[in-house]
Structure formats: structure tokens, C-alpha cells
Length: 228
Image 1: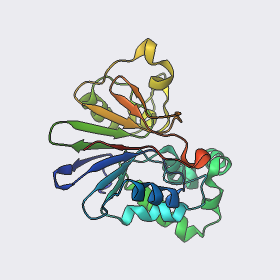
Image 2: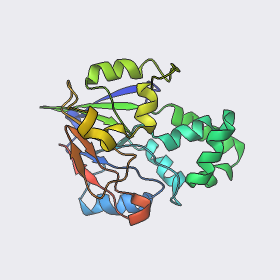
Image 3: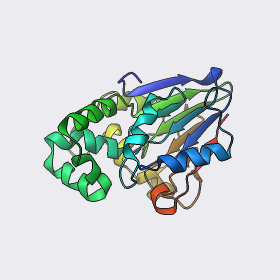
Image 4: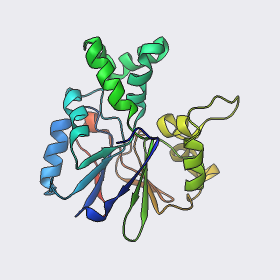
């Protein structure tokens, strides 16, 4: 992936395209689940909602997925905490207390290599299929227009009092799933959006947003959704 905050995949070449929720260090579980659905590593594509690491034991194996041509992911808040930890003691402390201890047991060289890999991850993936356009974001989208959301994401993590950037919301937000009946509506200019971050009991659809993080580490299950 290119290091851009927004990454576009043309999935015409793929046989089948799947989405998977947050992995959190559960590499063996992912491979088991893919075998169950007869995932073809040569011609199928899997896109993850982020948070490859922390909590589970197989963090380096999950990072190695980034070397696989069939695997794509957006950046989650757990990747972001790794990135920010060298310069932000508060984030480092929160990270270590939320499953990130393994990261600080690595050598500085290993940590820096991982940080560089995570910096390459986009915050948004857009998938162009034959009949629809799919968006992937880790946590939240609070703008009701996909194009406006992408424009705001490209501004980066700006600090304006009283305003939360789309960048920050994409990594940390939970507004739509917690308050959807009050402030939220269908997001225009995109057919479906897949999100993780907030644990749900099962695949949960709110407007055209699909929540698929079922708490992999806690329940030893993953939600994998076929989108093509």
C-alpha cells in the first residue's frame, strides 16, 4: 500500500472479495476461518477493518499478512497507538494497558520497522466492484457524504477546538453506532461501508454501514462477509 490516507482497490481481477473484522493478533483463527470458506489465496481478496495487533499472541504473524498480495487493511487505532507511542507517553501508556505490552518488549529496531509499516496503511479503502462501490473505515464516519468524508480525511488530524477531524473519528469514533437514531443517516455516494472497532454480537447493519468486529480475541470467532 502506498502511504496515502485513501487507497482505492479495483477488484475486477478478484474471483471473490471478502471483508473481515478486527484481527487483534488472531492469525491462526483467521487462517482456520478462511479454510472453512475455501478462500483461494491465488485469486480471492480479503480486506480487514484494521487493528491487526494487540490482545492476541500472534501479532507478528498478523503484521506479516501485509506481505500477502491477497490481503488489504485500513489502519486501526491500535496501529495508530504504535505509530504515536515514541512521541506521546500518554498514548504509550494507554496502548500498553490495552493489549500493547508485546510491542514494548521488542527491540527498538523492530518497533521502528513496524511503525514504518503501519504509517503506510490508509485510513480509508475504497473498493470498486462491477455494480457497487464499497468503503472500509476502522471506527466511524460522521459525515453523510462519502466524497466530503474523503476530502476531510485528506486534511489529516487537524486540531480545531470543538471540531473532531474525520481522521480522528475514522480511528476512534463510535458516534454512529451509539447514537444512530438521533444524528445519523445513510452516507451518500457510496453503496456500503464496513467498519470495525466497536464490538457487536453479530454483523450489524445501520443505514448503509456494516459493523463486523465481533471481538475475535474474546470469543475466538471472526465475522467474514462476502461482498463479491
